[in-house]
Amino acid sequence: MYILLIVIVAVSCKDKKEVGLNDNTSDDVSTLLQFKAVDSAKLYAGKLVRIDSFPSKFITPRPVDIWLPENYSKDKKYSVLYMHDGQMLFDSTTTWNKQEWKVDEWASQLMNEKKVKEFIVVAIHNIPQIRWQDLFPEKAFEFMEATAKDSLKDISGRTNFKLNGDNYLKFITEELKPNIDSNYSVYTDKEHTFVMGSSMGGLMSMYAISEYPDVFGGAGCISTHWPGAMPKEDNPFPDAIFGYMKENLPVAGIHKLYFDYGNKTLDQHYPQYASRVDDILKAKGYTDENSKNLFFEGTDHSENSWNSRLDIPLLFLMNK
Image (cartoon, rainbow, N blue to C red; front, side, top):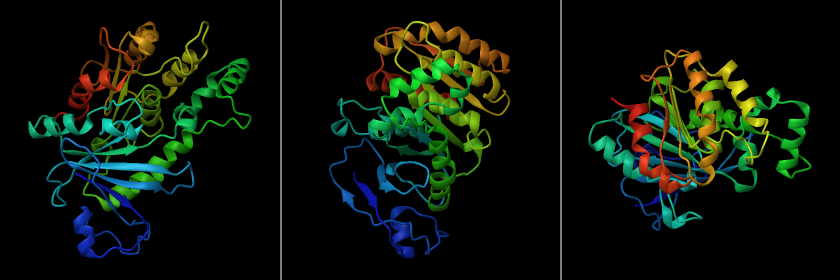
């Protein structure tokens, strides 16, 4: 298996076929990128393509991985799953805690069993120093009292405090998705476009489908971090997040929403919010057919817990 690192170059038609690009990809896309094989990537199946520093006018450039299933072909179309914290998804030998989501394992197995739509995964790496600012649902900030806003700024520890969730979503929808849609054989409609993440990435996935309901047809929110910041007594942030959801979560009908939570380590702070999530889903018209808010007894806040149940949200969101 190998990773392709992409640099700015024009590509010939032959090159396009080698990296799985569409024949109609424009040769003047000078944003196509010099690629390089990295033999150290350890995958269960398929291959990764990496843009080492995806250029953006909205967020700090960072790596973006694209996982292509085995036998990926430009002769058919695939759904697309956008995921946060991309460096934690595929290869535990390269992650800080030696854990991974096992996305390629589960995706390959479910597709081979023909239980889900065929799909590719677009994995956006985080930058640890600014991950929280990138993934906090920015408009929820306006549902906070002034004192709560000040405490959020204090928690960040930054004199130049700036939430960047709206720009993070602009990056995905205005810069990254057009690149994927143009260069890979994928469906571009919301019925085939999904977003998923854990913890703060769970919050951002909820935010993505709320802000861009015409782009994303489903959101997977794993161990969603309802406290919004460090858990504490009299925490104002959950009220703000739920206030935002009551006003902005898309009504039921054409979307799927998946939430879950455990009760160990950081997840121990999440069960208290389950009924509020259920109430909002019910008020928006969701049923068990198009929404889930599942409890997993004894599971903690880690990639090992998430990979043990990843088949459940994948089946729910992308079942055939």
